[in-house]
Length: 618
Image (tube, rainbow, N blue to C red; front, top):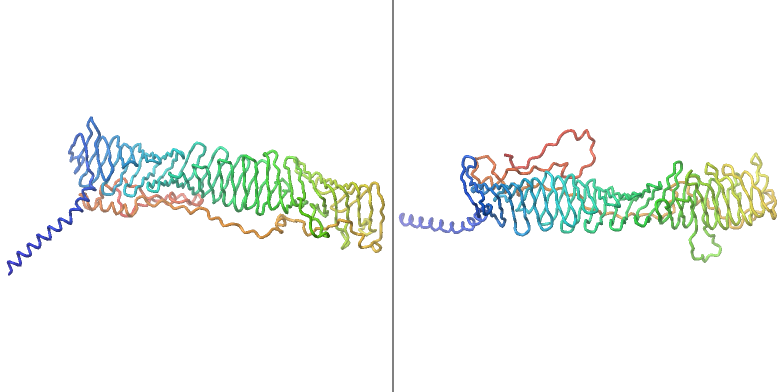
């Protein structure tokens, strides 16, 4: 029984060995497929002294050395093939092709059949159907279908232009480039500068992160997060966004621009600066047409004309600025208001010509009110203690001295000032037309009322004692003011008039027809310009996703491949395989992500390069 058992056991062992060999065939075949194959060489040399364990292959006069591996073919003038390490070094006029998509030329290539990582140096050029990469050194990971350079490179895209950067990564499957540090893209009409630049070669879409500029013949756009369509020349910016035209600077939380039309629109916290006319326009939605010299802004729109001593502020539901730089016209529509420290006004519409210095306050045509007793809100201006209304008001400024020169009121002119002492007393003048003249301190000094002038004055002596109430009609009236109070007045062609003691003057006679005291409407500060506006809710700007830094080129999957290479080679124990040579270092943190401004003293200590885990440098 023992012998039979022995025979049976021996048979079982042989049978097990046979089945095991059958199972091992696919593994052996797979290993064979992963091996680098030499398909042609003009000459083979064994030189154990210089190249232990390697074969030296050189070309002949007919053709180069030809090497194949996993669907790729490489040609070179000389190759050193380490068969057991599954590794090859290629020298001289090296060409590496992968199907119909990838073609790389260089002076030198080293390639591992285990990691499928190629390192190329010397005038490296990699082309695919979408673009061409040029660099002095380049890494090609065939397993992940990625190309990588970190010592400067150039990418040429026919329809989009040329891109240069210090660090570049190409994701072939996604047709995406990721450039880092010193990125410059130049096309026929546009130059883009950035430190972090993602680019999709099939669509021409570019994403900019960190301080970036887009410059063309008509504008310069700055942002720290933005998008640009290089094919259609449109884009938007959402962080510290700014567009500089020849004479305008546009800033806002979000900017959209179309460089084909020289058009830009802005949303939220907008500021448009006119560098020639020293004016600023603010609001929360704006559109600018550079070629048409047109600007439209709304949502708390505010126009500021900057003057050396006292700027002028204009607010309305909508503001339109038109005209060439030397002839800008500001149009403020609907609930328009104007404010200056010593002058303010209000009307349906205010139009200001910066060249002539003429500002018009007018009311827009409206349907008549069904209430026959309602009072029409006429254009109105206040200067110190005086209120002036009329159908149309013109304010004329001296553009050289930046001072107000005169005031014109057309039709139904009415001037009111509250008496300094009487609780319900008002000095009043009305007539067909008003001409007001200002002194050098921008104070209303003289007012002339012409045609059908009427007046009510509270006459006082030097001690400010009330003498009486003077009411009269005349052809015209000329009044002199001092510190906002009536100093003296002269009537011309008086029709009738008399002075009555206050106690004997009827209440109903103290008010002229058309009287409308509107002191509660007077803006007394810039903030008052907005007090009648409805609540404003700004839209939430979604913008762009935050920048995603490049993952390490030598990542966990590559480290696993390298470790497999280390375990499968004949190198001495503890020594790295040839596949570990020339691996790129990990990108420094400051190179990988956009950084905030840091004081210089904090940058004096150098940052050490971080070595990839599990990889040793030979």
